[in-house]
Image 1: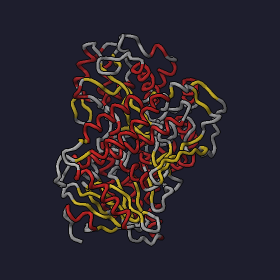
Image 2 (image 1 turned 90 degrees about the vertical axis):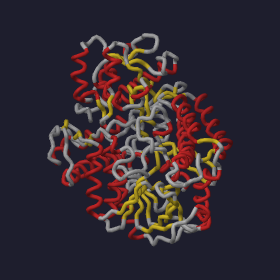
Image 3 (image 1 turned 45 degrees about the vertical axis):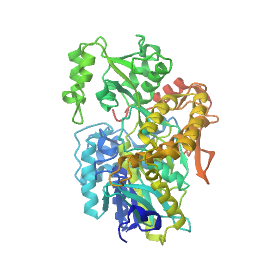
Image 4 (image 1 turned 30 degrees about the horizontal axis):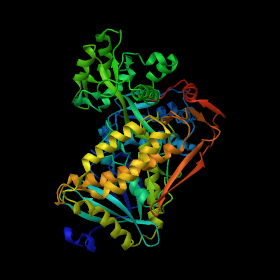
Length: 602
C-alpha cells in the first residue's frame, strides 16, 4: 500500500508490514526474543522506538549478569564452586520477600548458565567477575546481541513506536499499529504473535534514573488488549540518587556511593543510619539490598519533613580521610565520570564537606504483564519478557535484571516462534484498528490546547510523593481519585504542539502521558489493595509483613473500560515462607539473614 497522508489515516490507507513474530522493544529482552523466534524458524521483526541497540534501559546498564557459582564455572569464569543453583534460587526468593513466582525464578536460575555461555560464544567479554556475576557494559551486551540478531536474519525497524496491539475478529493478537517517527506516518504490522519487551515506566517519576523513553507504553497497550497485570505495587528505588546539583540530578553515579561507606544525614543534621539496626546498615551497604533498605530509611526522613533544601537527605563522606574515600570512588567512577558524563560536581560537594543532596529514584519495576512459564499472557498471541513482565523477583529485586532480559527474552521468543508456526494469523479486526488509529491521532486534533509536558511533570512529582518507597491509605486513595479526574477532565485536552506529524516529539509525549496514567492507576490500585508492608512496598498504616493473608499476588485487568481486581496465591515449588505476621523491618532482616554465604552481585 502507498504511504498514507494525514487526511487518509482514518480511511484505512496504511503502509503494511508483514512478519511472523513482532518484537516490540529495542533492549536486551527484545533482541534475545527476536533471536529466539528465528531459532524456531519464524520470521522476526524487531521494532525499536529509538536507534538500534542504543535505546531503552539496556545500553545504560552497568551491567552485571548474575549466575550461581557453579554455572559461572561452566561458562569459563571464576565462580564459587560450592555455590549451587539451589542456593541461588533460595537467595532470590528470600530477596523477593517470598512473593516470587517460584516457577519463573527457577527458569531464571536454570537458564542463567546457558545464556551466559552463549553470550560468550557470540563475543561478549567480561571486564571483571566475582563469585556470582560477570561485569561488562550495557552497550557491549547490546552490540553482541545486535551482531547475533543480524547473523540469524532478524529484520528491524528503528525510530518506530508501536502504539497499540490489534486483534483479529477471532480474538488473538494479529497486528499492531505503529508510528514511523522520522517520516510521520502510521504503519500496520501484521503478524502471528507479538512479544512485548518494552521495559518499565521510569518516566512516571522524578528524578528519572532510567531512559526517558520508558513510559510504560508496552504495559499500557497490553492492558488495553485485555492482559492481566500482577505485582504492580512493587517499585524498586535506587538510593543515593542526586537531587541537587541540577546537572547530576537523577544520575545513577550517585548510587555507587552506597557501596563506598559514608553516612546519611537528614535536613536537620541528624544521622540517619544511627536510628537503625547496625547489622542491617552494614549488610545493605555491601549488597544491592541497599536499594530497598536505604531508599526506605531516606523516604522516612523526607516524609517527616526533615529534608535538605531540594527535598532530599545529605550524603557525606564522614570521618574518613577524603583521599582514602576517593581512591575507592575511582574504582567505580574513574575520573569522576559516569558513562562519559562528568560528575565531578559530586566531588566538589563531598570534598568541601557540604555533602551531596540525594534521595530515592525509581529504577526497576517488579510488576507488569502476567506471564506463565512460556512467557505467554492470558491474551492469545501475546507474550512478554524482561522488565515489562512479572514476577521473577517478587517484592524486591537484587539479582540482575540484565540476566532476566536474556532468560525471559529467550523463552518468550522461542514460545512466540513456536506459536507463530502453529497459528494461522488472520486479518486484524477493522473496528479495533480504527479505534487504535483514532486514539493515535487525537493529539494532532488538539493543537494549541493542553500541553503534555506540564501534565507529565505534575504526574511525576505526584507519583514521587504519594507512590514512592513509603505509602499510606489516605494518599493512595487521593492519588487514585486524582488520576481518574485527570484522565476524565485533562487528558481529552492534551494536544501536540504542532500538526506536522514528522518527528513530532510533542505528539509522542501526549501519547506517553496516556500510558503513564494507565500504569500509575494500576500501580496505585495495587498498592492500595495490599494492606501490608513487603519488600519495596511499605505502608505506614500497615507496617507489618503478613504471611497469613498476603502471600498472594494482586491481579488487575481492564475490560470494557472497567478495572477488575482479584488475588491469587503466589506460586511455590520448593520454598515455603515463614508463617505469621512480623514487623516490616524484622521480616526484612530475616530475609537478609536467609541468604547463603555468597551474597550476590556485589
